[in-house]
Amino acid sequence: MSEASPPRVVIVGAGPAGIRAAATLVEAGLHPVVIDEGQRAGGQIYRRPPAGFTRTVEQLYGSEAAKADALHALFDRLAKEGRLTHCAASSVIAAQDGQLHVLGEGGVQVVFYDRLILATGASDRVAPVPGWQSAGVYSLGAAQIALKAQGVALGRRIVLFGSGPLLTLVGSQLVKAGADVAAVLDTSAWHQQMRGLWQLAARPFVALRGLALRASLGRRYHAGVTLERIEADGQGVTAMRWRDASGRERLTPCDMIGMGWHLRAETHLADLMGCAFTYDEQWRQWLPKTDRMGRAGNGVYLAGDGVRLLGADGAEIAGRLAAAACLADLGHPALAASADLRKLARLERFARGLACAFPWPAAMVRALPDDAIVCRCENVSAADVRQSVDFGGGEANRVKSLSRAGMGRCQGRYCQLAAVELVAAQAGCIPDAVGRFRGQAPVRPAPIGAFLRNG
Image (tube, rainbow, N blue to C red):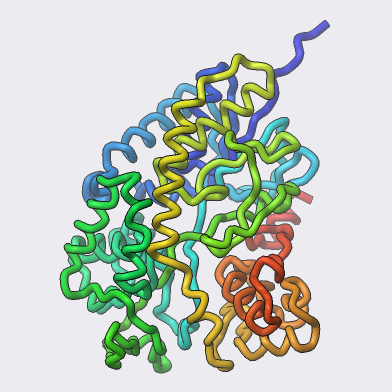
């Protein structure tokens, strides 16, 4: 009788969570398959530039340079030694019954798995502002990717707005790189930021580092602002119109705008896998339900910002825990997890402090004028969303069907949270009662030719 083949464990995502999960599995004697959209492992926070890039690791990652370098070296070593399989520049676009449909350079391939670890990370959480559909408006993450991966600023004169750590981080990185940052506009007032202070004390050095980054912005930084409108002409952005904390109207000329309010968990694959979700009132978004180790049921494990918005350090810990849970379920000896669980609890306290100090601008979204665009992909206005509620009721997918919000290329990644706020306001209920857009395959845009080449 032939010996049974070892179980195949597939990891989706090669950021901090995916790398730590892979390393833990390798140490236990397994050979995981790691599928990642990037050409090189590192994820968004530790994104690596092309070979031959002239900026140093310290310039790219600042105080996190040592962590980034260690993770990159670990993954590269495991891949070079043949202890894992790295499917680079590949996107999982569908999942069902132990199969992943993976889009790569050769078209769409089917990858089979016995256990699946999703470490899909997060993307920018954006809120509509009148004029945000204009050329020259980007997410904060896009601005950071351009700086890290290509060493360029996306404009000659830049305004950044939103709230959260990424706002001041990207602002300080651009300033340090020599970009002309005219203003960094934070919608969270000083008194609101102070409310999260006691929870932020769970990581005092990180909090102090954030304050130092803010100080580096000097008079560019403004707290408690009200965003009025992005001015634009036929060529793109021309200025940002806003009010300062005292209510005084300001107009800042610019040709590029970066925007974002912390992060939005990337959950489309978890949705396709049938994971349960719960609405988190503080984060104002739906997050997958797991146990403390990351088990989501049916042989699926979740790790990183795709399930808990805890940043790179939390993602590393969650990746180890998810891999440990996977190993235990496969009959391997249990790995010690108590220390990691304690660290994770401390990181969660800090993250809750961030959510309190830099909240999602629900009131701003609900007060959007009717002519403001909510869904940029399908050019759906706030009036279209509100009228859909009047016609079909306050349920997310009914509104989606009637208004087409969330039916474009991003599949609701950028408009869903805002659309749900508008629906809840119009229907007189809370966002939790509205529900969320259902995930559908393909979860990323895929060319028809990719399917035909493998038909």
